[in-house]
Length: 228
Image (cartoon, rainbow, N blue to C red; front, side, top):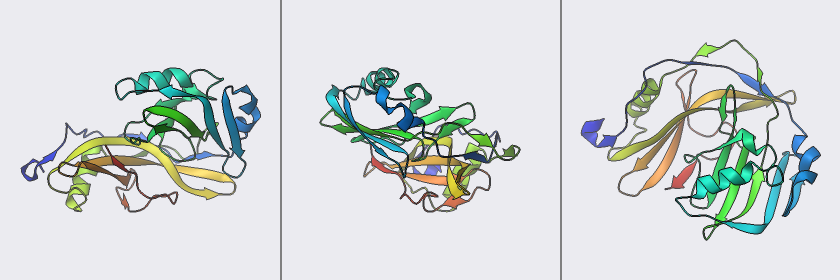
C-alpha cells in the first residue's frame, strides 16, 4: 500500500472479541429534562431525542474546543448524563462536534446514543442528544477481525484509493436492526480515509464479526462524510 502513496500507522494484528448487544427505549432524558438550565429544550417522543438551543452561546477555537466542551457536558444543568459521552474527532466536522456514548463494553457510534453540538462561526449554539440507558449482552463473545485484517481487506476491495491517508480506524458498536421493541447492536470498524489532494475524508464501515464491508449505514443514514 505504501508504494501507492497510502499512509497509515502501525496496524494491530490482534483479534479481539465483542458481543451482540441489545437495548430498549428509555425515558431517562424526558424524565430529567427539568434539570437543564439556560436553554430552550424540545423533546421528540418518537426518537427519544432532546433538541436544545443554548441561551448563551459558547466560544470555541480549534485548539480548545474539546477541553471547553468536555467541561461543559460534565455539569448536569448543561447536559444530562454528560459524563457518559466522549468526544469523537472521527465523526465530527467543522459544523458539528460529535460526542459518542461510552460504557464498559465499548463506544457506540450510532444516532441512538449521541450528543451532537452545532457550531456556527466558532460558537456552539445548540445540541441534540439521544441516550441509551443500558446495554444487554445477547450472546457470548465472538472473535472479531483485527485492524490489520480490516485495512487489508478494504485495500483488496479497492476501497482505499491511491494517494490517501488512513486517518482513523476505530472499533465501536452501531445499530444493526430493531426487533420486538429492542435495538440490536453489532461491532463495526469505522475506517476514515483522507484524500491527500482533495482533503476530503470518507468513512468506511466494516462488520467486525464477518469482515464484510457495509455499503450503506445499517441504521439508514448515509456514510459519514467530512471535510477535515
